[in-house]
Image (cartoon, rainbow, N blue to C red; front, side, top):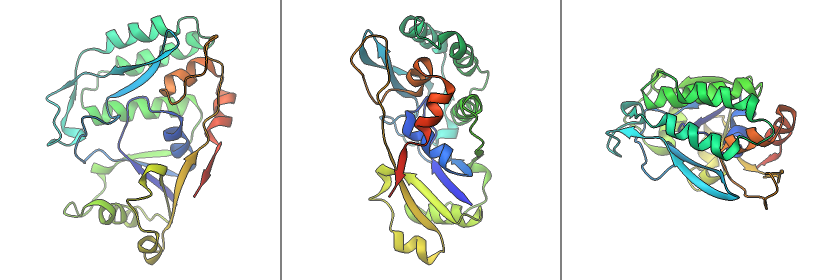
Length: 229
């Protein structure tokens, strides 16, 4: 079984979705410490031809608390207004916006489950058949750290192949995985340009941007445009 383990991100960029699409089981790594300057609760969209960040408000967030110990705040309506102003003239706005609205107005207040719901909703829209599980649901040795903790999770879910984001290359030793009979690869995204109104292309934006400007069929081609290293 091919597995990926990643912290849940807020409307992540295409590379994150390529990783979801590439595996059989995606483990939402929610029982790890929240990182304030990461992408757990922020991302960027296209506003007036430029990248502009937007942030999901959180309650009592701290790097000393786990992701699943933090609650979502109350600025979802404000984010929806920003998205509407930015994309109301985009070709797929009418089709995509109801899903984004459903995600952002979800009654779930636990950050981990709020983000997990978002990942599952967009995966369903894109016909991605990957299964999801939260890491807190997996019985494991929580005294372990870093690579050892990942290996423990992988063994408990009977993984034979682990695919990680390309940024994780310095964190893992392939020999250690081979000793556990687990193949290790890193996913290197190939980012394609696409038409964004009449602007010069702005890369690495949230999946929201891709959804607004591309059909499901076009996005499916993007999902498979990567290489494993």
